[in-house]
Image (cartoon, rainbow, N blue to C red; front, side, top):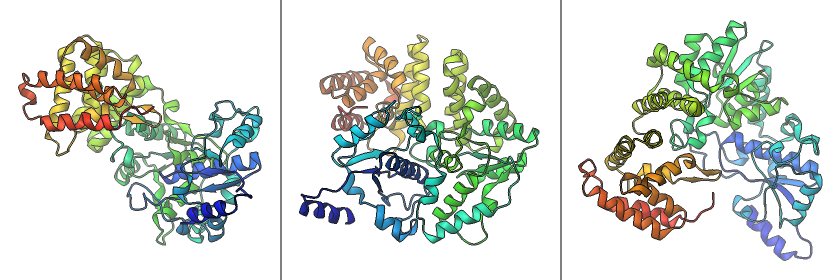
Length: 479
């Protein structure tokens, strides 16, 4: 409503157009929203304009996120000065072109924009040349202090800064939530955000051996309890105030407490990046702390010793992340063993079967590759869904590009060689690319194959067709 009123006022006062501003427009988790907001505040200062932000409440009831309505998170004055309706900001706000913009190019882009520029969640140094604009190198302690928070959030921040901490406390953010247990768990795109548990244990033990205390943050209460009980690390949640906090207040308490740790270790988690920036630091990525080939060995050793302590999901993710990081250095046999272990721990995740298929295809073993896809389709057939999950995952487009792009060529080459299960996957890919004729030819070839494949007797022809038709409707979208 607020945005529509402002839009009407702009229309009524066409002779006095609204000044351009920097916009933070995010609808995802708290860390990414705050990253975008602080980026917007920094860009506004650099370009000498104002900033605005949106705050949709779509995730307010999502157990994996700590989102509350804006009026429960920010002060009334801050909202009045800077909040704008999400629906009113779909157009007119391009992002910086990057990756080496300087001050002149940023001003030109602002002048050319209809309404202003949009700040993303990515570090500003990925779009702006730090040598040309040194301000992008700095952390966000000043911007965070300038945010007008709700009194309850301010109290949580104050409580975090009042916790007595020893010098050199190591903070580790495990992440988990929707990346491991929710709808993103099959997406390779999000896999690097969470720290795999064998790597987490190794990092904890190394810092403890050096005489340093480790504070663990994250969303998985059971895993944190296990790591703390077996290593002696400290659960950050035990340091929260005894008074009841809202979920957003808990999150900001953790954010502020994590910012006091040094180093802060995590995956590519917006929450951890945010915490580090509040103290003008950067995150130590776990993949840089423990190289990929080393992670393979320690994963094998840790799963053998402690695998029974972890959930199936965490075991599967541990195997997958170790494989994925080191895939170009692994032998075929080692790669198959690790992906198979990930599949055995989480047999409902189609990602592993797709990867097994491509490993076999690259090895020249079409039969084993086809078998992996037939098993994936048989699992799809057993699921009570209108479409086939593994097929949709294969052709999935995300904002940053194809989720499965690195295996497309393998499937396409096999489909080109003759009908088989890969034909259906190529059909979905062609549908997404807008090639309706090619998609339907592949679909017909797949149906001819299914007629002689008893293992797919339970595959509903209507669901197969519906899957490709769905992709045709979504087709021709750029990556």
